[in-house]
Image 1 (cartoon, helix red, strand yellow):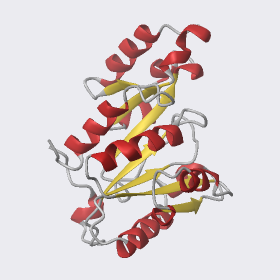
Image 2: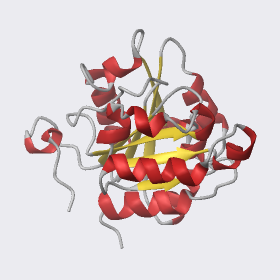
Image 3: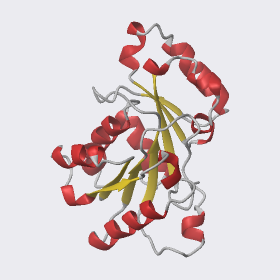
Length: 216
């Protein structure tokens, strides 16, 4: 059973939509994964919206708005202006306000996805902002990432190992990488994906639906 975050327990926000985070290093495939998740979740009847984070641009938000996968008005952008983890951890008020704006604009919203700007392995989400979060790494970053045991790898509710198709081309032992990831996470879930081809995305959606939305 998901423990309610301090965001909901505190009563500071009357939010009804579940809020989840998607973090990970630059180029790990966060936006590509969200692009694949949107039609899968919408196909399951989930009413959703997205908040993207970038340093000084709205690049990821514009990409999603142009995708045709979601009403552009359901995508808001937060410009961090500094270290990306600041606005998802130390002071997430800009993101919280964006989420509140989406809920005010779309009554009945069930899920808001917050995409972090590309960050390092120390990136984590404040539970004042999200109820549940995933961390996305990719095999091209090296199979030693799990052994480095960064907070993102260890503390996330779900670790996603993306770009599995690249393993043979970058000299990565994929099975070994997944074994080490499972070992360091001590039972917390790990899923392998190839977001570009949609492989493993249904399993990520299953996890979100069970852990956050309490759908079967």
